[in-house]
Length: 154
Image (cartoon, rainbow, N blue to C red; front, side):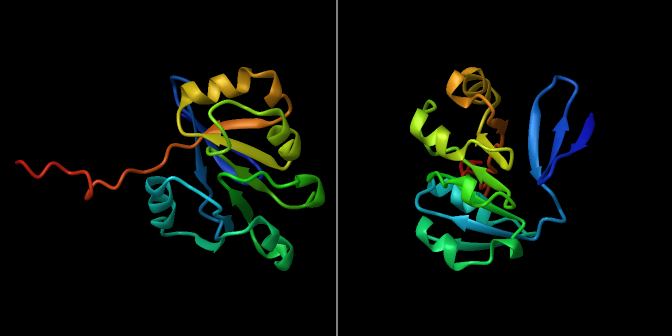
């Protein structure tokens, strides 16, 4: 297994070449733009212990914050014009659409962006799509609430 440091994330490459993004332990503060996120995924990220998520529910509120005080801006379902914020790291996805859409990809295209998908096969489909050219797409599987889904029959 090899570990490579990215600007905002550790990328772990296992022997079978699956990429997994792990939020860096040094990353302490994330602006979470929650206009919509699947409830199970939301529960997963809200359970992270080593980070502080400052949650907002409207993209327009971004301009009311000093983004330099955050390690990253995470917007799972709403594109943000990253050209306005060249010194800010952005994490998007996986809730834009099932397949890439030109208008959304054009808004987030930048070297300060990672778009996430929850599985390697979805990541490959997005990476191979011409609309994702010059957009870094990585797998970010969400945790499972094992208490909620444990088998109570035994």
